[in-house]
Image (cartoon, rainbow, N blue to C red; front, side, top):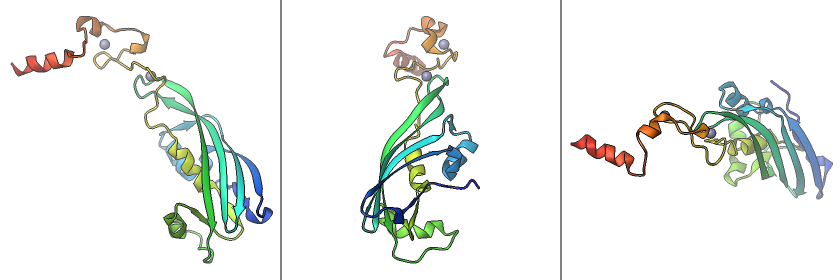
Length: 188
Ligand SMILES: [Zn+2]
Ligand SMILES: [Zn+2]
């Protein structure tokens, strides 16, 4: 296990705000590590996180932004490209009244706070790993495109249509009703 150092010590600041910066490899985050292992995504830069934490009684408001770079495969033309991933986030942590849960019971320990859309913490230390990880996962592109108007590959010959029309198109000019025409012929 890689040691995690993304923590806020709440004793360090009372009723005022604290600015922090972290730079972490994606592998530090368990879910991202798994996605990398399954080749679902590839990070080409560390994740840089800037945040400000403000303590309000038993709650700690964490606001900030994060950025990194991903190697992506275009969902239309299969070209690989580097794409930025950046997001702003706000997470509220709330100190839990009950005693510290035992190690190895992560699901249980969060139940109460999660009911209110918050993340719980115990004692004087907030572990940011899970909250930050969730933000990264939320902005992973589901179907990345190398560019907005990517023309993709020809379904018949596989040619990259961004590089020009293929021969298939010249033989069968595709108007908006071309597919329909095929359908009708098929019924005869
Ligand atoms: Zn593309
Ligand atoms: Zn073609």
